[in-house]
Each structure stands twice: as C-alpha cells, then as structure tokens.
Length: 401
Ligand code: ZN
Ligand code: ZN
Image (cartoon, rainbow, N blue to C red; front, side):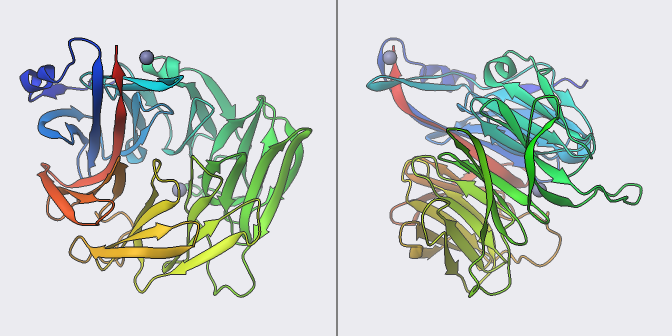
C-alpha cells in the first residue's frame, strides 16, 4: 500500500469560505488528473487559488461516487483504485438542499486488483470492474467514504473488459465468450445477462456482440453492441431484456460509449467516429443521429439542463446539442485542433459540466478552460501544472445549517 500525500496550498483562503452559521453556499470543485503522472489536483472553480494535490501511483480516470461526496481514481495500468472525499456534501431534503463545503481529503487505503477499468454507479452502489480479475467490486457509498472497500464481489465466468452492476435485487453483467484466447488476451464480449449475487444466471443471455459502453437512464440500462443498443429494464414481474437495432438507413457504425440522462429517460451515445445518437429506449424512433464534419473527442450530458448535451470535435469546436430535437443548436471554437489520429490515449481535452459552465481540459496548453454554457464564450482559463486530462466537477448550491 502506498500512502497518498496531501498538499494543501491554500488552507487559509479555503477556511475563509467556510460558513460560520446558516447561509447559502454554492460552488463547484474540479478534480483533474494528470495524463502522465499520478497527480490528481483539486481546485475550486470560483477561487482557483484554493488547490490541493494528491499523488497516486499512475494516471487516473476520475469518477464521482453516487452523491458526489467521494471521488474514485481508477489507475488501470497500475492495478489500483484510490478514493478521496470531495469535500462537497450536498443532499436535498424536502424543499431545499443542504450543502457543506470542506477540504477534500484522501481516504486511507484503496483497492488493488488486476486491471480495474469501467466504473458504474447505480442505486447508491459503485461498481468497479477488474478486467483481468474476472470480478467486479460493489461498494456502498457510505462504506466507501469510511474507507471500507471490501464489500460484495461479483464473479464473472471469464475475465473480460466489461461491467457488473446491481439492478433491483439482481446483478446485470456483461458476458464474455467461452472461446479459448491467447495468454494475455481477454475474450470478446458477447452479451448481457441477469444473475443472482452468487453468479447463477436468471433468464437467457441477451446477445450484444462486442458490447462496450453502458449507462443508466430512467428504468433502463443500455449497452452498445454491433447490432444496436441492448437494454435491460425492470418490469413488475422481473426483467425485460432486448435489442434496439440501429435503423437500416444508418451508415455503417456502432455505439461504444453511452451517457444516460438523469432527469429524463434518454441516452447520448457515439455512432462511429463522426456521429452521435440520441436514444429513447421506450419511444419510437429510438435513434436520432447527429452528424459532424469532424470526429468527436468527448461528449457529456448537462445534469441541470436535461435536454442539453455538449460535444467537442477534433477541430476544437464545442457544440451544444438539443437532445429533444436531436440537433446541434450552437457551436463555438474553444481550443486549437486535437487530432483523433494517433494513440487512443494521447492527451486530448475532456469535458465536465459545473452548473452554468462547461469546464474542459486543454492538455497541450496546461489549462482548464471555462466556457459559459449559454453563450459558449470562454470566461476564464485556469493554469494547471503538468498535463491536465481527465476531470470531473462536483458541486451545486444549498443551505448550510
Ligand atoms: Zn436543511
Ligand atoms: Zn472500455
């Protein structure tokens, strides 16, 4: 186990932001991981001089825990996952939200295991798939925040690059092929299936060739496949699984990354390199395709404005999407071009939504760029040491009392 060093650069100014008595608080905290090193930096968007740095073993992909009180730093190449408290504690009760802001801190311990990769949050549980271990760790948020990571484990028949997540009182997991593979290789994914906690299958396999990308929205879990988007939904008498095939008039392509909207039942996914799709799993037409002149670099949904999504294309243009129309409603140039040629993990911008702002990393410039979501105009840049890459934003507003 390696300890995490916490370096608080601006304790004094942070403490001043702590409310003394009941008052409205609001703010967004950005966590950004370095592309090359294990540095994870945190800063307050309104007061970027409030900074903290945590050092983990390797470059991390960051995820919030279900409520945003925790941050998960997945270091796939280092077989390690570290956890932080975000310092943002926000929960609604009745007619208002309570929110407190304290300093972020490392949570003692961490998880080690063979090639942790996809993280899925659902029903207050964080699921981390260990691709070369053949299992997923399922951790309740309350336990995670206390540094208790040895919760339930769901074992898959074959180790693979997939996921397993609780849905109701069952587990939905990707399933890999039974075929023999070369040493060091992982078998291809062939479908989705519902299981008991102990791994006993409940019902048939839903075929989903080369499954990749999974997300929840409303009562649906969706995953991208060669054939279309496979779904799992809970009904009054169990689970319904099925396939939403790509429309026959679509060009060749497939969905391999999905984001699920929180305030309405809709998904935003990729479709090949040059298009995105808005997927409504319940109503026809299930797919609306939006074509772009350039390949997409990253896309996100806007949690507070459920019909909005944003995509950055490799020419450095940020587009705002209207999910209901399935169309782009505004575009603006925000960075220099970032070609999608080259290694898939070359540093390229990543997007996060922080209230009314879009925050993106500009790794070549060593910057965060803050763009107003309404005007798409840049309102600030924030210098970040190293090569800022993956980021998340946690925050909101509420009352501290
Ligand atoms: Zn309250
Ligand atoms: Zn993946």
